[in-house]
Amino acid sequence: MVGLATPGPLCRELAQALPERPFAIEFWDGTRLEPTSDSGPTFRVRGPGAVTHLLRAPGQLGIGRAYVSGLLEVDDLDAAMALLEGWSAPALDARARLRLALAALPASGLRLPPAVPEIELRPRGRRHSRERDRRAVRHHYDVSNEFFALFLDESMTYSCAVFSRGAQTLEQAQEAKLELVASKLGLRAGERVLDVGCGWGSFAIHAAARHGVRVLGITLSEPQARLARERVADAGLGEQVEIRVADYRELSGDRFDAIASIGMVEHVGSVQIDEYAARLGELLVPGGRLLNHGIARLRVGDPEAGPFSERYVFPDAAPLHLSRVLTAIERAGLITQHVEGLPGDYIKTLEHWAERLDGRLDDAVRLAGAERVRVWRLYLRAARNGFRVGFTGIYQVLAHRPQAGAPAPF
Image (tube, rainbow, N blue to C red):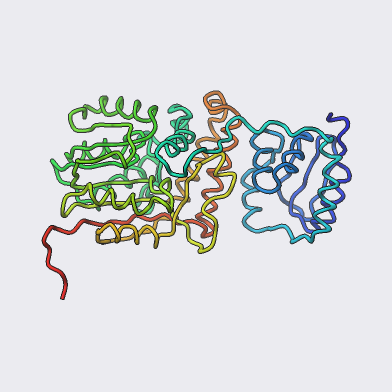
């Protein structure tokens, strides 16, 4: 079918539709759309299946499917991301869109659409039900512990590091972040701490070892929990740290002096944020402290997430506006004490992760497969750009539950 596909008409229509284009497009038969500037990335369309993906799902999802499957490649991924920051396609009228669609038909070879990539997930069931949340979280985290170890620091901390306090390496910056959370919470020896979305146990281990607290860490990922338990045992902290596979909504009867939620609130969603804050508030003793660390959307009116992220990166994840998180905390009866933004720190964290992953690509493909590696290389850069252009921010919110019987203000 490749021999029957002719990209020439599509190439000519693209030239008309994009009179200014700081990039090139090369097709599988050697047809090439030249750039109108001296520099820019080159996109390579490896086969007619890429065009078919776009015809089937125009826009971000079709492009994403072609890229994940390897039918669409780019010679410089960082240059492509920079292109997206500073260039946008001109608006096309209905007639121009029709001409492009008609020109794409011979380029597709009039073939049936190729299968969607194996790693694409379309979550089923009620959004943010416990079962659907489990499946969505496991889609992202149950790749393999060894895969994440390729680009994370030694503590396996999968959240924003803090470089702005003087750290030079990723390891130092993650250590600084863990200690920043512990110090904001004012941890004292013997206290009981809940680590919501504990990942591979980095904060639980840090808090127990450095501050003498007892920690319950919860995650929805069994592979994460298994490695976290091993790391707890290796640190000699089995008497102080417990790791469970559990949803925060399943906790009842327990009470904690402090709660750390680091990089988990993004998975909660607007329909659950009030229940999330209320449940954490109920789990705190009077005077107990909450540190909520999470990504937030900055622009009012922007969608919660794009279709590529929904299917391939973080299904159902929805960074909320900071104001919405603060409102939920207040509705839960908690009092906000301090808010700190760390966007520059996350930009640098993501740069470290992307560089580390790129340095271990052969191992990454062996552990996770080529499709997932393409997703992660794009995702790390897209997340970095989100902070650069002011689409997203990252905030730590410190709040506490008032003491019982505290007098009302005059």
